Length: 118
Image 1: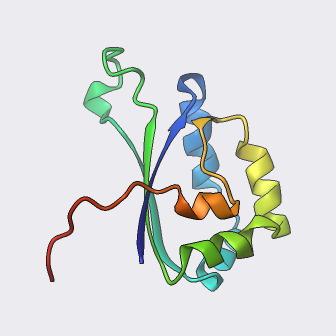
Image 2 (image 1 turned 90 degrees about the vertical axis):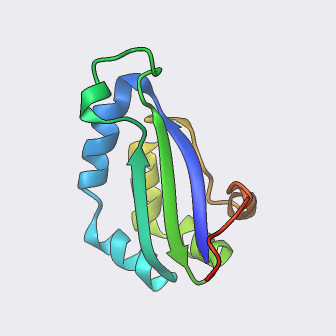
């Protein structure tokens, strides 16, 4: 299944957020794969050409797209995993809007409006 999420990073913490995501522990990446994810990309709205412009509100919107077998199971397996708990504590103050690991988190993605037919 494909899951899309929208979160926001605090405008004053963008550099920290990006640095933290360059340093994801291999153990956590392995656990995410073991929980059924085959891909997970996070993109931040904006481009280097727009970085100096304040007109777009600091480009703090984050868009996550992941492929996994079962998103609810993936969240349940990661929720109490020590490496993930440690990781979430590290990045907890960086977002303005977060996505949780609870059962409600599995239903938090936006609804699909249309997909390209196969």
